[in-house]
Picture 1: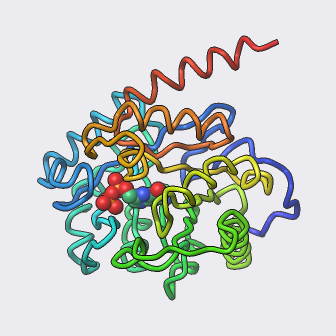
Picture 2 (picture 1 turned 30 degrees about the horizontal axis):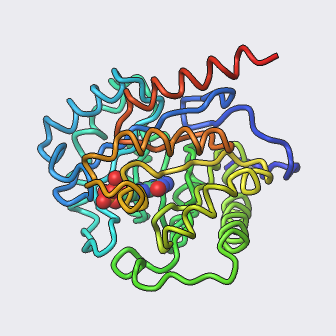
Picture 3 (picture 1 turned 90 degrees about the vertical axis):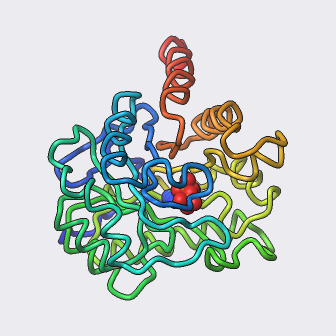
Length: 288
Ligand code: HH2
C-alpha cells in the first residue's frame, strides 16, 4: 500500500502503472480492444482468441501508449456478463501481458475480474463504476496498478433514459474528487489515479458538450484526465454518421479534448489519432 500524497494541487508529471511509468508531458493514446460480441462500434471484431492478440499488436504498431482491454460492453442497454465469462474473453490477452511492450488496462467494474487481471500483471484498471463495487477499492490498494475513475449517472442498461443534472460540470467534478479521495484513503497513491468525466454515460449531447468545454476546470485539481469520445453517439448526432463512419469526428473530438487538457484519449482509431496529435504536438513544441 502507498501512503496518500499530501498535495492536492501539484499536477502530475508522470503516471505510475505497475512496472511502467508514463510521462505526461505529451498526450497519451489509449487504444480500445473490446473482446466482446456486442460493443457498440467494434463488437465481434476482436472476439475470437487469436484476433484479440493480433488486434492488440496492431494497436501497438499504430502507436497506442496503453491498451484498454474489455470483456463486457457498457453501451446503453447492454446486458451484464458474468465474471467468469468476462475473464474467459480477456484471458488470451492476460496470458500474454509480458510479451506486449505497453501497459495493459482492463476495463471492468467487477472486483473478481480486477483481482485476476492484477495478479496476471495488468498495469491499470479502467472502472466505469469508479471503484464503487464492494471490494474494488481494496483490490486496487493491494496492487501497484493505476486506476481510471469514471463518472456515470445510473447504470448502463438504463443510463440514457432521462439523464438529469442541476449543474452537470459541478456534479461530475464533485463525484470524481470524492472517488479520488476514497481511492487515496484506501491506499492508492495519487500518481496512480486518472479521472474521466464519462462522455455518453448518463448524459445528453448538451451535457457532453458542457463537459468537453469544461475539461480545463476538471483538470484544475491536478489529476490527469482521460477523455473517451471515440465513435460515441454524440458524434453520430452531430455528423449524422453511423459508428463505423465516425473516424474524422472522433479525431476532431480527441484533439479538442487534448487542447482542453486531457492527458489520455481513449480511441478506437489509433493511427489517425496519432497523426492528429503529432501535428498538435509540433505546434506546441515550436511555440515561443
Ligand atoms: N467508454 C466506453 C467504455 N469504457 N471507459 C472510460 N474510462 N471512458 C469511456 O469513455 C469509456 C470507457 C464505451 O466505449 P466502447 O468500449 O468502445 O464500447 P462498449 O462499452 O460497447 O464495449
